[in-house]
Image (cartoon, rainbow, N blue to C red; front, side):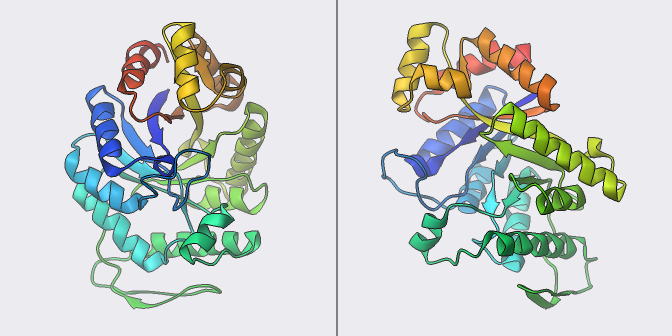
Length: 310
């Protein structure tokens, strides 16, 4: 079981906050640091300092860290054109020495699209675009150097792209997909993904979605064991009940609510909950959604008391 750090900077964090957490996560032995990709807050946290661009962040962190893997859960397909996105990811992968992981999804938050002037198509069209972008991205990265790549789809047209630069990782950085769509999404996951993630969902629905992905793999003759199954869950751990309560209050939640829905409680409680998730869903990776980025002691406790037990 691998535990990764996952942050939500749109809820009130600047680059300095993210850099401090990423460096601390690296120093305490966590294998990866991830952030969300949003241009507007999704909760009720403070509006300042405002949102930041996910891939600009990763490019900066790539030069300020040396070992920890870096990624996004998940870049909405509506935010960027696929040809430009292929260049961005390949560039950040080179800047990091091959430590980038690429998360992509159909997007869901309509309000942030209006806030930045981006179209928000229907759900069906967003899934269409997701499929086309995945085909284009893997096609661009897989085109031999010296050849060109073209694509004609319903939503995107690529003409004689030089398909450069190439990522450091071959054939491309790991592709992480996520979402709750029951039909078309599992088929896309089976075709393109190295990892499938379900964020902030319950065990029963997560297990059912994982089974749909496994069935889609069987339909095309792919071994589902080739896909890493993961979840993202809010974490709130304390050595005693008073510390748990203080951390819950800091992020505007009650202990009762967190205990019911998230990885909350003593280190032993959290280890037990992760074990139940593994038994029920078959996960081998958990993204720990850390909401108070000023609380580095929280990361220390997780690294010392939770990681060794899972």
